[in-house]
Length: 194
Image (cartoon, rainbow, N blue to C red; front, side, top):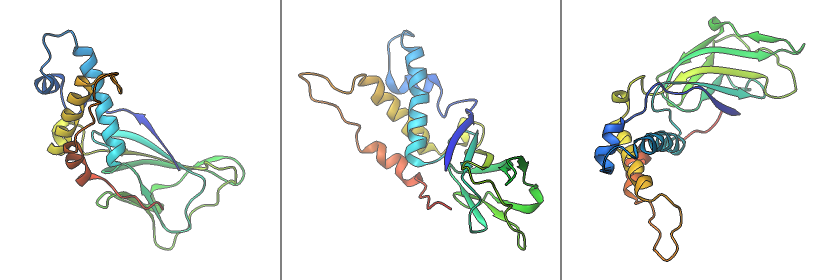
């Protein structure tokens, strides 16, 4: 399976002002740098937790439909499925009718479930034949994200701001404190595939 972000979030889990309150820079000289760190911290924590924080459009690609009736989608919370397309045995791209499957947004990770009595269509054999486009995230605003995950973003931004290089010669290296782990690990998704 391959997973790509098609549409990035329209905002970040924290604002520049919130990050600056945490980092305490002097003036506005580092505003662009801190803004970039916010996006870096969010993406890093999304990878660690295997979640989408702010609503974004994702595209999951599979070699074929599964043997089971269920497809689990990474990066919960699943908001909606936009489309399921596949390449048929003749090499033509088809769209699977939405009335052939059910979208489960309550489970984590979210799922696409083939309706009872139906079967997945046959696909070509060249790989990457099934594409599911979907929206995932806690919501479309920063306030929708869990408070401890927003704090984890602040914490990581602060660490990256204070420690701009991975190695400092002649100085002890500052590792990211375990406190950060305590903030994000309870939200980690354990994904067992399809």
